[in-house]
Image 1 (cartoon, each protein chain N blue to C red):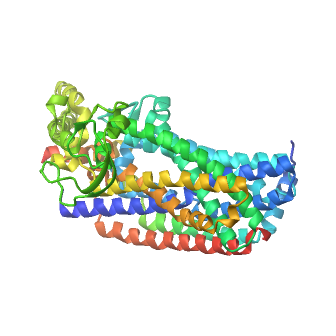
Image 2 (image 1 turned 90 degrees about the vertical axis):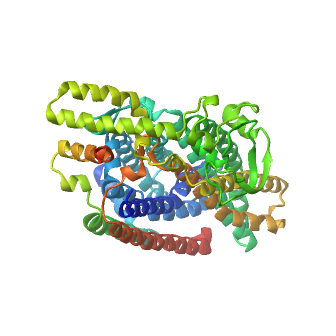
Length: 73
Length: 509
């Protein structure tokens, strides 16, 4: 089945326009994604190793330090 | 472990448990209801009966609500990996990277493509293409669950990997051995079959409510027939692969099995405790009874664990302190071996830093002899290898008890449907409605068994949660715990509110 880009666009456009309950659900999805990525990820969930170390070698060394800390003591 | 670190680890565990349990409210319904909707639509396409189309659209709407509210809730767990569990995240990156990337790509393309046709295409696509799209959404949803369950299966039974001491990483040796390990296969089959079961209970619960309210009776009765058949088949399948899963747990995670059954002293002809009240004062190694009250079935645990009712099943004490007669190496002995592994790993690191190749090779050789017990090297007492017994025991028995009750309900519904007396038995409709909630209880209990039962391990035997976590302030983890609690509770209220509204409107919507 071949579908022209224009028909595909119209399919999605008409689908979104005809939504009733879907509008509410999309609002919830967008608010949720905003909270997750623009608030939680940005301010609370930085990648610890990515942020504090510049290379994989440094990250490996840090994790290896953590794994052997007990032995060093 | 210091108090601050313990606080951080426990808040990190609590936060992960909270997000996983909320996530798991949405996921099983998506997995199961997608298939039920596909079955309903198949009947519509086969019969051409418009009432089946109306019925399909109604359940599809509820599926859409659940999907929309639940979508991306799992991503929050991935945030936590990098922040709260950075050691773990680094160490398993090579194993989990491939499966999770496959999941993301697969789920996005399959679901995004056909989801639109499923909801927007009723009047624009042909009947058959629309049905094909509905099936693709169902199959895609379930296949996307494969990869996260493969990752979970690997944590329970780490296979086909080697520890690289230079990179501090577990590296995958064979993708297919990881993807097709018995633990991964059983995780997938048990999780999906129990999700079908839950979705069947969901459909029967709401249909039962319609019958109690004398609304949409024909739709309710038709829905209940299909749901009870799927529920019955899923129950049989879940019981079969649950039994297989227990057999593998007996050999791969014997401590978990012992906790599931509250078995402290290993024995031949080990019984299953059908019902029991755990003695809260019982500790490994003491002489107190394990139960205050118990009803046992002799030999059943031996049969479950070894397929032989006379065989020996190790108890918690055997696994903690060892049992030379049975050639069981206990946690006590494994801790000694694990401490050598940790010490040699430290020596290897220092020797490499100093450029001492011979010293590094000698340390590595000794490390390799003890590396299978690496995780035990971080435990201080052998009793730390024991998971919370009461929680594991009760969760397991709630899951099995409800899992035994549900097929009886499915059978009753099917029997009454065939006889045409379903709406005469209002008590049965009331039970179906109650089962809607009980299904979620059983589903959550199953994951409690899987995850609490494997404590203290993030990766079985190799990495305890205390070492897997990041040394960050407990306060910040506590703060995000309550943010998640607020966010997820809000989502759950939204889901229930919107669903209730749609259910009140009914299939005319």
